[in-house]
Structure formats: C-alpha cells, structure tokens
Amino acid sequence: MLLDVLIQSVNEFQADCMKLCEKHYPTIHNQGMSEHHLGLAFARRLARTLNEFGHTCDYSSLESTKQTDFPHHYRVSSDVGTVWVLTSHMISAGKTCRHKLMKDIGQWKSEYGYAIQPNDLLLLLTDHWISRSKQSRELLHWWTGQLPDEIDEYSAQGINLYESESQLSQLLEEQYSLSPYFIKFSHPLKRSTNQQLVRKYIQLYAVIQWN
Image 1 (cartoon, rainbow, N blue to C red):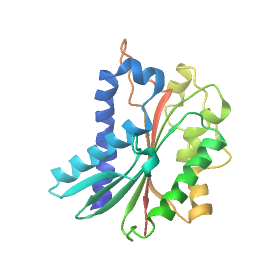
Image 2 (cartoon, one colour):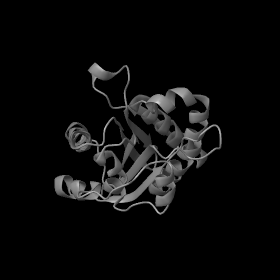
Image 3 (cartoon, rainbow, N blue to C red):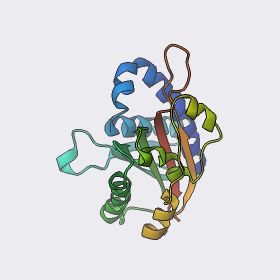
Image 4 (cartoon, rainbow, N blue to C red):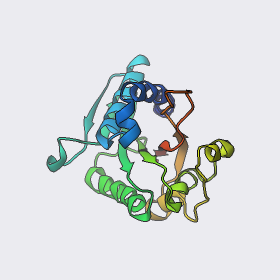
C-alpha cells in the first residue's frame, strides 16, 4: 500500500514541479531547485497523497541542529509506514557528488537505524543541470542503467548522452546490499516560448524497499 502511494506521489510530483517551475521560471532556470525546496515540496506532496487515501500522516526534517535553517532530508510517517526522503542537488555529476549520495545513505542509516522498520521505504531524490562534462552526460545512464528512448530529442537540444561504466544500483548493492525497486527521471521545466521540455534540467528518483 505505502509503495503504491509513494510511486503515485512521484508521478504526481511532476505536475507539482511543472506549476512551480512556471511560477518561479527565472530562478529555477538559472539555478535549479534548492535541496531544501525540493525535499520539502516532495514531503508535502506525499503527505497530501496519503491524506487523499484516508491515511493519517505527518512529516518532519531529519537535519542535525547545525542545519535546521534549510533541511533537505525528511521523514514522512503514516499509519501504513514511513518513507525516508534523502534529497540532494547535484551541482556536478562527478564521483564526489555521487559518493556524497552514498555517504548520505550511510549517515542516515547510522543515525536513524534504530527507527527504521522492515517495511519502511527510502526515496532518493536528486536534481541536476546537465553540463558539457562527460560525467554529467553519463548521469542518466548511471542512475537508470539505460539511455532514454528519446535520445534524438536530447541531441536536438545539444545534449549528447553517454553510457556510464558504473551505476547507482551497483553502488547500492556493493555498499549497502540494497536494490532499487522503482527508478524514474523527469524533466519538469518547459520552455516558455514553445513549451518544449528543457532536457538539460533533470530530476531523478529511486525507491528502495528496506526489507
């Protein structure tokens, strides 16, 4: 049940982000979404979806006391289970940022391991502006394990995507014996002139079942 609600929330979040991107187009177009706004917006979306299905829930941030001004990791607790949302804004797609994501999982696990229940879900939520660097153009393949079907539409916007030697699922398995159940990516920003998707801006999702 919780898994279904989470996947529906991921899909509904695309529409939320479309509206948000329209309202704050210049800011998001120049900088992307901050980790804080991305994580908070998704926690609210998941809470709304749970409420719509008749479940009681609440959400709270996970940050340490030093970072409470702009928290970006959240816990959404409900009567059908808990979703842990770890959010990151990948300034680059290099090894440092990828390993920081793995480090965040380890830190979350060490700090909240006592509270994690067997049926809890972990959501990794990331956004990135695709740049000219090779590692940036490998990110989609690194995250999903495959190149998108609309490869020509990326090329038309000057984006040549590459395959990555390593993959997110591989790192999760090696470091934490975890395997993503559901992986998705989206491009929630549209050009104001012709309503084409801005494929340089990407949001990435990975749902992991804890059991």
